[in-house]
Image 1 (cartoon, rainbow over the protein chains, first blue to last red):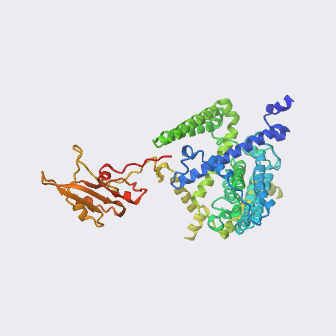
Image 2: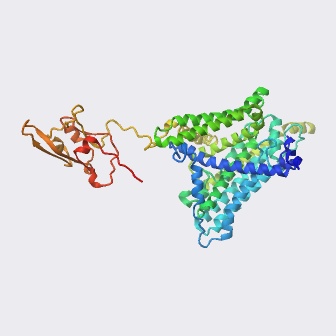
Image 3: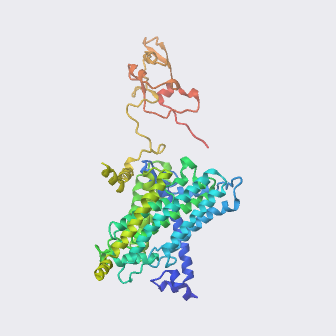
Length: 429
Length: 153
């Protein structure tokens, strides 16, 4: 029994799913569920704050120091709100839709590789699984729009499904070109892979992230994916399904309270999922940057410590802001709170810097850092770009991204097979 | 020209420019929002706010000589000065001074007319009151400034 519980810990190469340890797979699922939920809470605050600073505002400042407790206040507000059921709505589907959207958003998480063995499981069709399950989320959106028995949700959900279906094509082709690149790994006999872990492994063996492979082909494919993934998650500038000036709030107009918060949770979880696809396919997943230029044990250690140092810097930023708080007796609890928070963050950072810990968690930390970069991009785009018109959206999807991604796919294949092509042509003569 | 526009589109130049602009706005010094009750805004020196009557800082006596120039200068006729002659010194002494802020447009003409630098428009900008009558400032309130409201639960 004890052997069953701890058996997985001696394993250092496989994910729990592959190693067949159901218990540890469950533990990983719980950790990822809690981690992603915590991330959504943090992102809720971070997005409001970042957006405010992009628009030269302060953002939430009153609930907790620098509004840090705002997500909790929001959650309390949402949980205590009335659960409105529209007249004439299809009750069963109306209640089921947010659950469905949430389920699909979280199910994709099981193949995300946070490290060589830090994933729930490693499927041989991992990337296909992620795409397939996240596409099922559209069904939930259509269900929500249809079951609401209202015009705006219906129009919003139709827009949403049209948009997701059209951008999935370009997205899929961009992914195929990255998957194709895995087949150029030396020693794999030209066999590519769809497994998320193996894709990162291929980048490690080839010694380059796929974004830099066959420059600019990898970069163009990445750019196509980066645009399509914003459209996939219905975020600005492609947030037509939720265009508040036209459709109130799109498919979730009739939802309130907890059910509405499910949609929000699913949206942010979806952002996390597509960002992790982009990270895995093009940005080298859990790998640290500059593996060739700055190689060696010392550099390995330095890069492993880097996330911890970053956390310590965040802690010092908290100290700096606590010192800069307005001098007012009413602010005293907030100042003290910010000092305590800074101390906690610095302590966590120091823990992360310690060499044995740093080497153990550096893969997870780098993966999360890369996802954080995408989250920043999401907010940055939202603060900068105005919303596309629907025909422009369709034009970009079908007439620009699709041909380019097809071209990139073909050219990637040709460039990758150049040695064989030369040999074949030489042999033919 | 067409090639240039095409290249701009291909390399997303305009989008990148926009991103650069918003990125720069993130600097904390760009923030416009004030945390008003906690941090008070910097009022310009020339700002004309609530009226104030200055007193002689040594004796505490008013500087007003009841010349009535301010009342005459006021376009709204909202200043009322009453005075009586002191039988001993034969000087005019101000007995009553009212200033109706609710009608005031803060033009500052009374301030300019005052020959003894007594009447002055201060930088106090918190003018709201609970009652219209409180807008009529008497001499005491003009000299001591508006008393802060005590809030009770």
